[in-house]
Image (cartoon, rainbow, N blue to C red; front, side, top):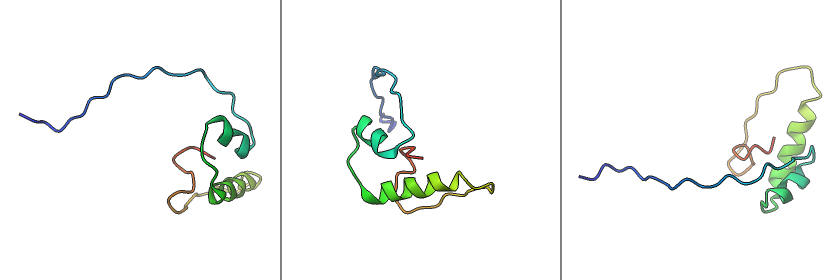
Length: 70
């Protein structure tokens, strides 16, 4: 009987990385390809942290939300 589950082997966790406040530094550290829209998105989000109001994030696919580029 096939149940549709796919089990993956455990992967060894690498050494902890010391991330920067700078998006470009983190992109290189994490070995991610350069994407200008992600850099612009990260800059806009970073600038919003200076506001006293809550910030809601909505962006197209490929902007770096999932990768935690914020």
